[in-house]
Length: 275
Length: 306
Image (tube, rainbow over all chains, first blue to last red; front, side, top):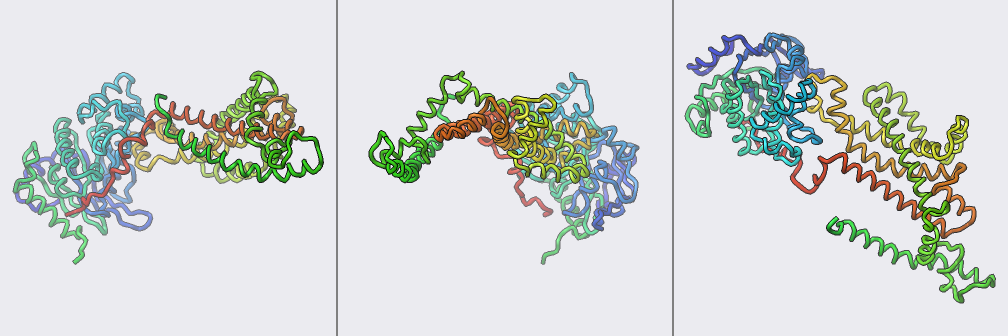
């Protein structure tokens, strides 16, 4: 479907042959203002993949994620999440969503914030606390269970929000620039932690970002998107070995793929021409 | 309290300045009246206008000494039906009951305003119109109306207090219910939360700080409503009844003392709201002292495509 510029990409093609957990066919999204936010998007994602959607503002990456999550409806095209349409998938609580901002409820403690989806979904009262505590251990914040969100740093707040998204054990995790507001150092740490979490839980993660190093470091495949109209330019497999470490960023393979992403962005006018 | 409140020093400074400024003002206002009293040849315990200025029976502005004496006369005995304490308690209860009543009514109005455009469009103009009618005009009519159904005594005053107080509460709570940001509403949607859950878990708690801000405004308004209701209807108890009585008796000093007492009552009632707020919203405690808020963390880091 998507041709890749790298000759050796065996991992990704093997993935794509499994029953896709996310299936997007000819999906377009035109807003009421007439803006074409997304044009003829096609994408298949296999269970267990870590997919990054990368591109500049206005390329439709957040739109695509919101379409998958049934927060908006497409103008045309078909989307299936685990064989269901997005609305059914949302109603069966198939995915957890992490937003740009932590969106924690300031009147709830950290633990209680993680318990929020479990309350809404009517989990048995006894199970809620146990699950939430387990999730806090997973993101390394068990010591802050009784704190209020404002007592935590931005990075810690976003980790709570990840724990909350995973609390009801969805197979899919949608992340919309979750680390975009954080400083570079915090972000690199959280990237590493997110990869560990991905390995430990076996979730399928779809991750929106506008940082090339972040996309290359995290992903099994990178979906490069370009604006006006928003479209999928190409899909680049990332065959860097797992588990990835801080040193992964220093390898030649990392630079090659980053260059490839950069060139794909330039080709689709993903860079503003200023010269 | 193990240490002096940081608010105490500025409060005392302002009080001293007010007193220092008041003194010459009081002389300025009273000397002509004192001169006129001397001119009539009345038997006075003072000789000069300056001396008499602090001792007039009906001063334009009472002297601090007169206020203090009047205060001592009106405060004691504590259980006297003509002393301030019992009457203040009655007025305070009317105000608080009125506020609670207003909270209930205001809350339902707020939900109506948030839930239905039609409700807002059709009822809000009437509510606003109702608030422009002077209490002093509507109070006697309400009392007559309620009297028809045997509602008497302090209850009509509480209802009039509620009548004034429910508007700021309705508007404040409506704003609070609308305050959750779009992402938080999206979050509830991803959980497939129903409308009731979104209200219960998100909108209601988010409106609590707004509720208390509204309560503070409404409490002051309710107190005025209760006092005006007491003045403009037949009352046997309350600050308003004392004001009306002393007004008829032309006891200027007493009027001032009662007025200042009702101001203190207002401060205490608003302080009560603050205290309840601190109990109900533990997450806000010390928030202003520590850590930057999450919003401040969102500094652009130049993380664009490089």
